[in-house]
Image (cartoon, rainbow, N blue to C red; front, side, top):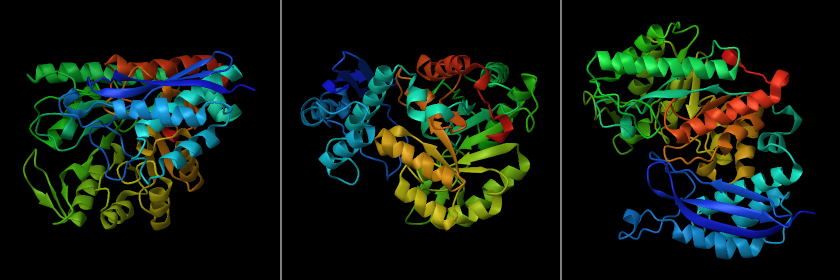
Length: 425
């Protein structure tokens, strides 16, 4: 039996230059599993806690030496000697060791780092790719990329209220072809922006962050880029939105204020109607966080208006948490869940959330965070869990491309059994 012989965590830096946790798990056979933990910019209030040092004199308080120490001391002491294949038991042991509702004692960044490193070590011990080890024989679905090509909201300093404008190349026959299509649209958007005299600097996730004057102008720019690339919007390629409207919702007044663009204020019903109008006007196939995380009535209205037409994704709404997801399923709210491993803080809980969603007929999307590393684990997990979609940034920045490149390798490895859902995502 292969047991865990050593666990070691260290503080490294993510794609934004902020500290994050990296964990090595070494087995009795000398096999190494290594995982680095991502970090979000716009985070949901109900996410598991990312433990930071809050020591202002070091990394502006964002150090993670406390989380690292929790791995090297508390967690290591408990897990060394356990079978590397006991993923559920290992995760449950860490959750119980933490003892809090939100992993605030040890830190979700500490627990997740160990959880993913254990899975990687176990896959190595089993002589399997990570996607095959986690997903078994049914892991053969390559995800449709949701490619983030234009940024606003908290990801950009411009007049766009919504956080991400993405393209989904559903007209492709393979993952590699869909990646090519998305990449060509990205490069053509650069030309469109240059022709308009706008900046082509990129944001945290590799998308462009130009000084566009309105939300409508932003989506029109994306449509122009799709056409310029030689594709048909609404047929070959659709638009997906991550609105992240919790960022500009006031729970006290119940109003959504478009601070960055025209300053308009919308009630919950008006915000839902706004999206219904956009769905009728533009080739939008998916809206993420179109209502605030705790505006359940607004979510209900939005779902009744467009839930049968398009995908409605809960990110801040569900935070990869089975309790919140079950509440949404019971109330018939949204129809898809965004999966972020660090929102919940362990691999086994992530798998549970995906399984619950699929059993209820909800779709799932594997997702990165704005603060990423070269770690490409989520690419394997997208295939392992048959999510059918992945959201991992634009066609720039090596921390984003690492995931896309891993999916190219997986598609090649799967060969003839690889399945790309395209429009059937």
